Image 1 (tube, rainbow, N blue to C red):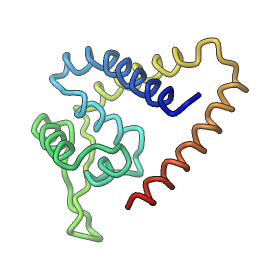
Image 2: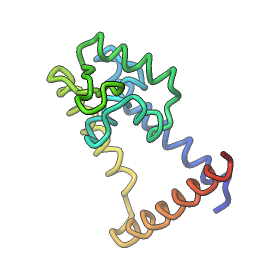
Image 3: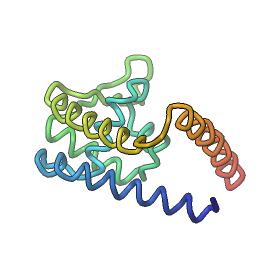
Image 4: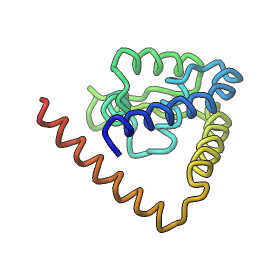
Length: 146
């Protein structure tokens, strides 16, 4: 598999994920980034700042800022000051976001199950192992670029 194949697979995965997300976004008045931000915080409770969204999810700061502001206005996120460091603003999911998160997680589970079709557990374990190594290599490449 050459690098172009990996890029193509990534793009196709992203397109399918967005297609699966579209009904959730439409029914809740969200764009894809808004849903991505909600699910990021729901699935990764150790992260709770806009900076985390940018650094971990790779969403540009301006786009993340607009998404966060929109989610706050819709009552799906709230912004709280960090008691230990007042310069930081923590983002907290609200009760109103929970049904959307449930729907999003169900979609993610269906997506993951579909990707695992005809793949044995041991084959999937091998894929995960290789993917982790590729992620490490990407991190090395990113650090060399800076």
